[in-house]
Length: 248
Image: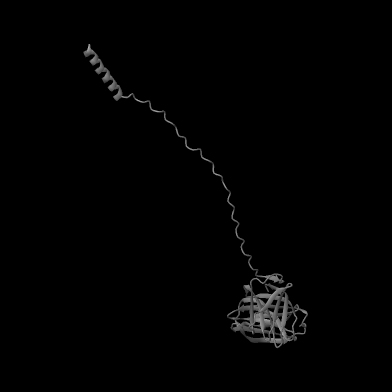
């Protein structure tokens, strides 16, 4: 009886060891699907359209200047004086003032150069006598220039000018003369100059008073402008109300 019980215990123990050493297979967990994140639509920020920078207004080649705005594109030059040039625009006029004797002032249109050209100016010479105001054509810093001057004493001249050094110019007379139409200081006067080929035509108050051949000076083209000068008396003030530059 004990023997059977012992065998039964052995069998029961073996069965327990077998059950313990061989676990039942576990049921695998069901897979969990991971969804990709839902994309958030990007907010589109409109970019400003760049505004192109305005291109600079080109200086005109032919024009009438009434001096109601600052002098842009102009050159101010002076001979015979070491003081600062007294040139300004006020009241719709270009004012050239020489504060010392024997000084020459130039306001030149530096934006363009001309071979053949017609220049006309209206001005008032409100100065002591003698004094001069005039026009310039074919100005070259290195080769010289031509200028037509009308003086308050009733005379006129044409000069060939050339710089010797900064502020010092040499003037060679080309011609001079008298004209009954030249008005006194304080009166409005109109002068004009035609540079055409090898000839200059001098105009005074609407009339051509003389022509002169300038071929020997070998100036083919250059800048244009106005000029004023003092002699033994100062100050001298020349006020230009209008300047016209056009084809001859």
